[in-house]
Length: 602
Image (cartoon, rainbow, N blue to C red; front, side, top):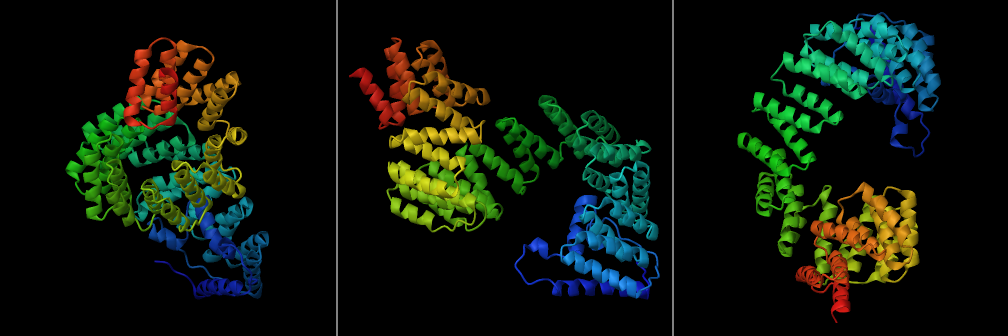
């Protein structure tokens, strides 16, 4: 039970009163919300960020520690009252260094735990390590059985280089937590140490703590987590293996070990170890879910789907697994299965907006635009609302209702630059689809007047500029993107292709394309550009190699036009016709494709 003297209680009341008084003395002017907080209010969060612990009340809620404070007599002298008032008012007026000094003096005078705690928090907030150390030392001396005081003292000793004393206070935290029946003590210590700037010193302290606890899986697990955070993969892996040996049915330990292998780049071994772990604990859903998501990362979608199905067999109501399975089914073009899973989620009232959005996409793929709109209209809020409204506008435009589509987009309030960009790009795309290139160009230009370095708008305008024979703008916009983002493969490829296709600067264009190819060698658009550049240089066999790869990756009309032209030129007219015929079945009105066919066959 917490015990305080009547004078100590008076100080607590006084601190609250000072908080109100200080707030009432603030200048009445508009300031950001963070600036309206008192130093004490800001310091609470700052101390939590800096030292890994929160207020007494927060800690109680988080089941970390409840401080049992010893009875402390406080002398509420005029000097103490003056320093408390000066400290709070100074903080309110932005003189944080004065606030730190005065609170520290008040802490020494009163020796009251509440005042000392506030002094420590404000010093941490001000990044005044010397004052914070002094306050933390006093706090732990006055309330030696306070878990929180020892945590802060440990953090400040570590920060000021006193490893031995930091270790002493963390041992106290462990002992006190055990006495009070607290759980997850070692992971809380890892969280505390992980916030320190000197990660190696933090790991050294943790090593001292676990040195005498080699048979404690919780301690070793927390140490492995910290070692992984620090980047010492050998120590992290070694500790994780010890945990698995001590507690072979602990799924989290296998996940931790797998993470160390991933960090080492040993992805195949990590997946093998996860399979082995699932043989030991086949019913652990968290472990299987983790394994499935790792398979997704490796694009092993079929295997991942099977794992999520196993989860749903044992836990049919697992919405996350069902949602993941639905997305994977969509990814692998299993539209009916994806549709069923998304509909199940909607019926269960889980992930309704996300599922409705993807159901709309499935309906679009199946050419049922009316149903697609119905699904999109369900989404009334959240991150998918904007996407849904854009999709409805696109459907309107494809149906010939361009005016209605633009009105829908213009009615959406742009509450951020990102939203404004997306609406602008959507409207521009609608205009491009109906070949109103000049209007699209003008919209992009208006957007760039407000967002001159927006690479997405620059790219859209560059492509549109080519359609209205403003090649000068195409080049300038693409060159600007490459200058802003030298690794932008999309812009590198577009710039290179335009140089190759529209100028005699073919070798210069090829250099841009080759740079894009190095970053993304499997992109069909880049392969097409590489093939076309070689064709323009007279390297027909090299051109044929890249264009065939491009067409295998994407059955696109423009790629077909290029591949057919090269085949025709090298004498393989029959093969050229086959390629063109295949493309015409999908896009019979494609202008470039028809122009090329006409040029060579008539």
